[in-house]
Length: 42
Image (cartoon, rainbow, N blue to C red; front, side, top):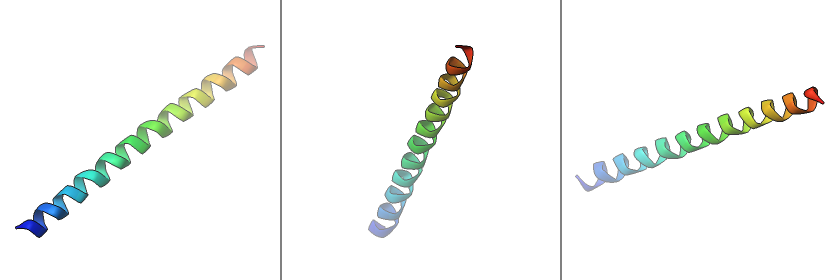
């Protein structure tokens, strides 16, 4: 039972880290697009 709980905990941790990484990637891409548009508007 303890092993199953530990495995589940690591699975949740991995999913959370992947979710945060995906959000950061999307924010970076959106920032890059906005910066590119601002430079093009000059």
